[in-house]
Image (tube, rainbow, N blue to C red; front, side, top):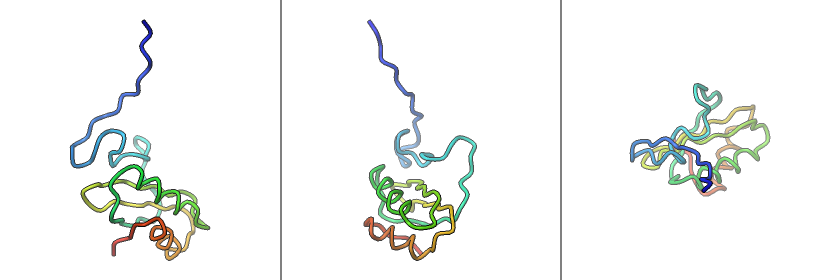
Length: 101
């Protein structure tokens, strides 16, 4: 009998979520996020992360947009490129979320 290949995901503490939506998602092992950081409120899952990343990535001047999810707290959006901060804020708002001050 053939057993299909499985991807092993690491488990994290319950406050950070499971291995598929932990706060390390989107950051390569050993890599440091470089860019402007924005604190985000209201994100609870990978779908929220995808919505924000897609909206911000469409902003003129954004090279990359990566969200580090913190379901029970303040998540972090890291944007690289010469994008206007007010355009980034507008994109986050249009996705249904908000930046914290």
